[in-house]
Length: 416
Image (tube, rainbow, N blue to C red; front, side, top):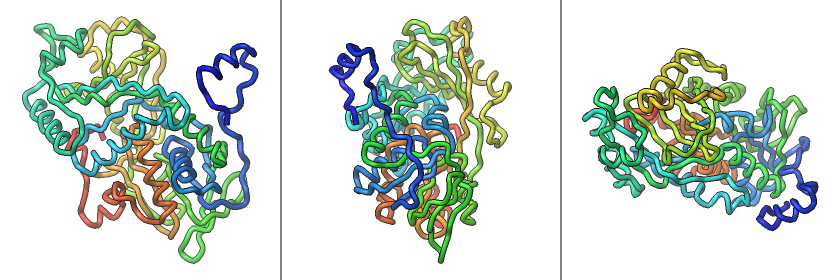
């Protein structure tokens, strides 16, 4: 694999950039693998990388029905954080954040991680109580989190509407300094490149049409490119996971919703943090190119559509303009929707299901991108060892039978 560096860039510049190699090999399916992962998004590619890097499995394939970076990995607002309420969630998301902090160096691929900090802002005394509770929980769980006053928040966000008639005057909120953003498709491309260099086959435009189950265990998959034998199968396909699990007779407690996001025209630097406003449900950041990237809550009606709808767009955009009236002068460049898989207790499902050898990683709702390194690490551990890692154990599907739910919607107020 070509190593990226300043010297490599300089040398390629002298030759007219004609010597660059493809980032990953365009593989075709082999008859059999030790493990197959369905889903070529961030979680699936990270799973393949850690299977090869940490567990030494090299006969691994990733099957993607479209192209790398074309699914939910490229359809999010790029926020990374670990400001959750329950210890199980903090352990999971902060593990992901710690992996993110060294990921560019590990993958030799710049994921453009920018730890500019994140503020969850409140505009009522009740919301400040919620922020206080979250800050206390974060500190008890060993994660950087502090309560920020209204004056401190306004100093950090000088364009925030603080006029006398402001509908959502900021009273302060919860601050996490290690939170930030990363280039979403670069995360997928970086994992794909590193996994391919370790021998993983990344097979694009390959749809799984059936599962080969013999004697109560996985024996292979049926695909549009032919059958593939394997005895370990991981599914990390976000909103498509319930349909794939149904092929094994497994019914998952998941509904899928569209989550919309927007990008404005680029402007000069004016926002140096990630902001989530509890009063409007709108969150935003400014990209390195100067674009404002913003979004809000889920669409109300379950769907697999990725186009969004006008009522939600109006709600999210009006929330932005309530906070920053000056942004009303900006032009929108693009809008998209990703499909998120939502579980009743608003936490992911990681673990074995159905026939022996089948494992899933799904149900992330709005938290999938920020959890990519941890989700991949934990699914790889399951596929390699057949047992849970201590971090993934609380997120097994059996928590619904045991009554050990992890309700982050009630705990930290996440939007799903």
